[in-house]
Length: 226
Ligand SMILES: *Cc1c(COP(=O)(O)O)cnc(C)c1O
Picture 1 (tube, protein in one colour):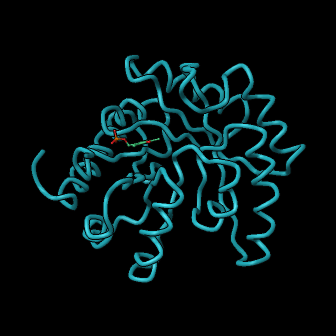
Picture 2: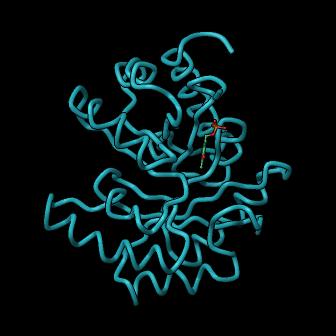
């Protein structure tokens, strides 16, 4: 892969614009999440300097360590948690992230319902929430089972008072991704959820074609992870 992360960021932005144009969508309705897990602050800084403000991280601890300093250097940062979240880290996650995309089970919904009001009282802010769906029903992968999503979403709202704005999925690595993206879009539609987080470095164009509002791109920007 050629160029620096800042150059590759421009390439990804251009590819998003082309993919949007190809299917008659406005690129402005697609948010690029630069996935910076395992990247040091020094690697991330030029991408911030190039104007990128939305980032994804997989681990609460790593994100807290890296982003406290970067948030002092740059304003307007929006941080998405895209990795699995342990219920006992819900409080830290709520303090650290602007968006939590990995809400995937009742115990976590309960923990978030406990922690979000505390954070609201403390800082006046609360994270936006996406529910992760295990579209491939893979046993090792987190995410709500497709047959249980409607019920889980209803419980998020009625039982835990959580506002969920969208869905997220990670299709099985060995499957063509498009059927999974279409499946997630259909679940979002019938539950009247406006946002769809789907598509990574290898398949964000296909995801855009199928309605992604958020694409999560790591290696195409930062290079292969060690
Ligand atoms: C790591 C990761 C990504 C980015 O993957 P790339 O293939 O490097 O673009 C996107 N989404 C999730 C949930 C991830 O864990």
